Image (cartoon, chains in turn green, cyan):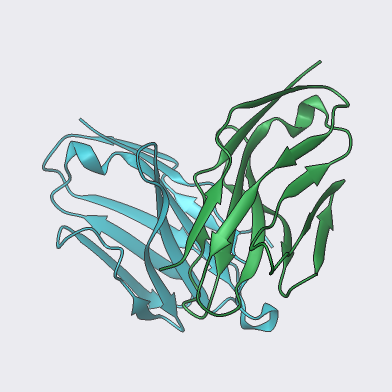
Length: 111
Length: 115
């Protein structure tokens, strides 16, 4: 079945540091890929998405590129802020229409 | 649009009691999803509807769980009887056909505690 593997957290960075959160997937067919973010006490918000190979999703300084050859969708940001502290979920969707999530990676950014 | 609305936001109940969680999707969306989040299992799909019809309920844990969508603007998830292992955050999400139904918008969740 479909699955998503994320790097375990927490990831602790200083403000303005470079961020990478690794995500790889296994899926039948050609999934769409997503990053969702969850701030404390809140629901999930879509951060970015990519629907086909080599697409790059971007939003709020975050980027991720759909790499079919490595089945990866790593999340990057050049300069993190304290306000980026949250839990980040990589996810995919196929014809089943329901999201399959990774386990989540907690990011803590220190001033 | 107000987004996906869930109620209650918090529910504390005793084992054996019936619990009903409610969701109002974004107007015009024709897909509705129920997910559960726990520390042990992460985020997992329970059930989803398309045009008010249940399509995939393979994630519903057991007969104690049931979900309905009587109309396009309302869905319920019921647990009867509740057990401590049902304690979790339950999320509702909706999606619209015009976006290919692959972008899901989540509600704030209901945090359920069963004592």
